[in-house]
Image 1 (cartoon, rainbow, N blue to C red):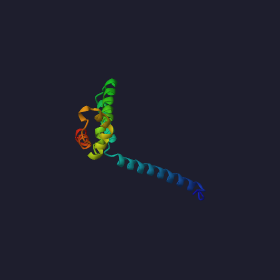
Image 2: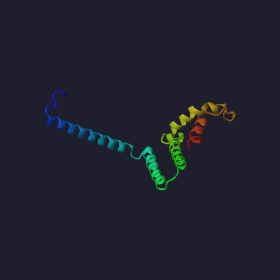
Image 3: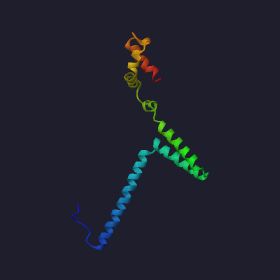
Image 4: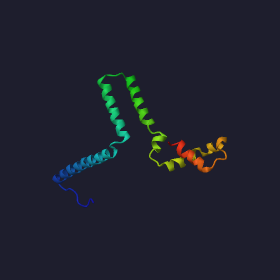
Length: 132
């Protein structure tokens, strides 16, 4: 708590080495824990793919324009992989049906073909048409 501190040169050197070792060890542990958490994620796969592409482009000495086009294409693929369908694919069908009802029911009610239909029929339409 600061009430006991290094007094002579030998103790000061020991404390400097100890604190430096503690910082390096802490950084190493936090880095490894972060790597374990991120392992297998889409971000890690994207980084690995970009690293491989960079090695390929460097090895083959590709021009700057083509490098930018390749990077842009891979980045666009990564960013477009988060679509509504991919986000909602793990949600149960009953909840997806409720989501589609809240999104599309006002439009379905305006269609003359569905006027007079029972609510159960409309629910079945939402369950099968939008998520199958």
